[in-house]
Structures are given as C-alpha cells and as structure tokens.
Image (cartoon, rainbow, N blue to C red):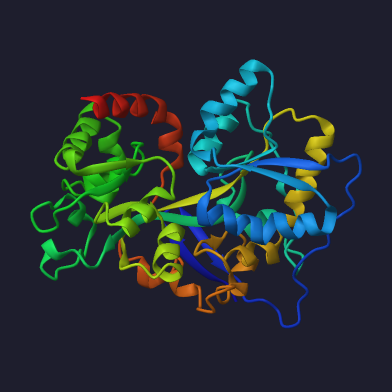
Length: 377
C-alpha cells in the first residue's frame, strides 16, 4: 500500500517498511579516492544533523577527514568565482532547489545518473523511484523536505496575552508590536507580503512576474521595514528569539524545533503559510578524479534509506526517500516522537506553499538586485 501526500507540485510518498528488512547498505570499496573532503552546508542544527547521521559514521568506517564550511547561502556566487579563477576547492555543496537549478543551468554542477550512483531502496526499488518528485533536475541529489516558517515568543507583555494565529500577524504592528527577523533575500518574503496584501495562492507567481507585482510586495514589506532585523544565516533568528531581540522571525523549521524543544525557550511555531523546499547536494563540475571518487563513495553511503532516516533523529526535516519515511522515530537525545514536528505533518499544513523552483531560477538575479536596492532606500 502506498499513501501519497500531495504538496502542490511536489509529493512525498510514504511506503511501509517490510518486517525484518535490512536497511543500511554497505559502503562499496573506494579505489583511487582522496582521503579528505570539503563539504559546504548551512551551519547550526542542520549541519550538526548531517555530521551525526552522515560524516561521523562515514569517517569512522573509512578514515576520511572532513572540513565543513557554512557558505551555502552564498554558494552560487562563490562557485561562480571559483570557476572563473580556475580553483574549485569545494567537493560537495548543500543547496536549496532553486540554487541547484541555477548551478546546473550554468554548467557549474555535475549532471548525475541517480540510479547509477545511489543505492536502491532495501526492497530493490531504484533510487530514482524512491526519491520520486524530489529529483528536481539532473544535478540535484535530494536529502530532505523542509520548510521556512515563523517562530514567535510567547511572553511578549505588549501583546496583552494574545498570540499570532496566522502569517499576517507579521505585518500587524498594532496588535503585535516588536522587532521581526526576516531573511535578507527576496525569496519567500515577497510571497508572504503578497499573500498578506490580498493576492491568492493561485495568482501569486503571475503577480510576481510583473514589475508592479514586485513593487507591491516591496511596498507591503515597507510597512514593517523599520521593525525588521535582517538575517543571512539560519541560526540567527533562533538566537534573536532566545535573546528577546525580536518577537517573531522567519527561519527553517528545524532551527525553530531546536530552540523550542532542545533549548526550552518561550517560543512557538507559526506554521501558517510555511514554504516547502527540497534541499540536497550538488557536486561541483569537473572535480579531479580522486576527489570525485571520494564524493561519490560518500554520497552512496549518506543517501541510503537508513542514513536519511537517521538525520531525522536530530532535526525535524522529512527525508526525501520514500523508503526512509516509515523509519523516522524518536529524537536521538530528547526521546520525543519526531513525526509531529515534521513540516509534512497534516496538522501543520492548513496553509502552505511549495517553493516555485523554476520561477526563482528564472527571476532571482533581477529580483535580488531590486530587493538589495530597496534595502538601501
């Protein structure tokens, strides 16, 4: 039996595991492989989850040393610069879907055959079928489904006991005064602004495709601009919330899980209009053979059914493999069930968006330039 949970254009397939099934695949031999890797990610709780589930056990098995860098937010620009200089020092890069599309389109990311380089599911299902709709382009190697959403403090005296119930509380300075934290990028901020300016979900990207639509979104953001703290790294909003420097802010749902469940801060999730994204790996194009061999060997290990499920022990992101979904259990340290904290939990999906990867791949440079000018005005 297969249960299909539709997320707009995307889907997550939940497949019950067979009893007694052996899950984790063995690491194949690695010949002519480099003995170290430089891996680029996002830092914070997410990067820790990757290290716990992937690189630490892989290093224990193979002796490979890892250097981690928290530059994923600037991956496109930095890879462009490395290729122009003829000196690509990164071996594996964690990116969101739209950035993977841009890097693939520009020839900066290696095209891969998923069934050739990744393990099948334990029941023999080819990797391409197991990953399904998360295979968004020829360069992208999926890891997780995550969302960007809002957290808010529950102890704001000026709110007189009220708590935000929907996204548009972010734009309501009268009832919910205080500083907000928003990412210093247009993506998601423009969608949220238009939704709270009366644009329907179905019309969103048609409106954004016009100069007037972007102006309208920036005008809505302008109503709270002087109350915004702009962030670049996902770890910033949880820290700002914990320190009481902002009363609400956007970030990745896994970061908010950490500040709520691990740090026990007076913070709650606001799931309304969370934005779903796929996150995964790209391999920089034209790596030297020894470095590429090590990367492929590591990816075979790090993307198998068990390892992807293992990552959910440390952070509340849904694994991209269908066969991993039923293996999501309790948090490795807290012992609490992780399923209710997943963005794909039906209770958290009253309103949601799926990030429009194609639209952002086509428009991001132009919209980013307009957004950066607006920030200075």
